[in-house]
Length: 240
Image (cartoon, rainbow, N blue to C red; front, side):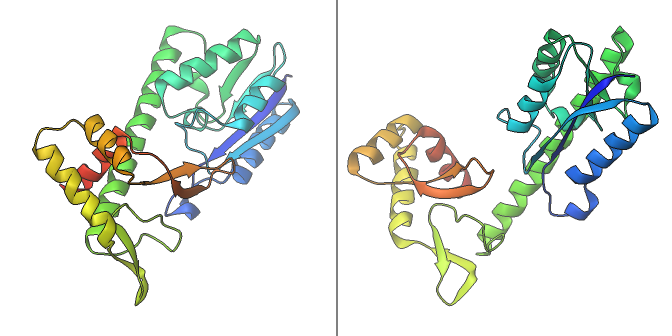
């Protein structure tokens, strides 16, 4: 009989009905505790959060709630993290509290022996690989739709150089002012200017890029920013 802290995470996908919601995960964890006579001392969930996100308030609240000899319960290892590196850091924090972690559907990988650690590492590597595939497919779909002048959704943030089509708000058309800037970026890059050099020129000339900022609720908003080499790189990659 142990004291358990339950943690779930859900990152929405296009086929969200095929994914386990935080409610379903918590229900499974509660049932596990009931079967094994464990006491639940805390329940925490992160919604709309990726397994690669370091800043997950509910996760760190869950770790803070852990007591000596208690257990952090999750359904699968990828609910904790989809990165082997991040997972190891979190496991170290849990170990420092004198607590343990258990993935109820992958219990064979939760022991302290070398074989379990190997299985755990393989499971996390697979999760990390799957995330890479998902990101690559999503990026390819977005680029394809952008080239066709379509928006991903009504809430989709428009890429730099595009604007909403006044005749059809489900489509995009080139933004004349921003297209001029893109042409300058392409020209300067061909002339050998570095990405940072291009960003510096644009800032000095008074051009303002549109950047994306993540809010504390996990939503994304478009705002004004300053030119950075990463923004220049993204525009060049999109134009290629």
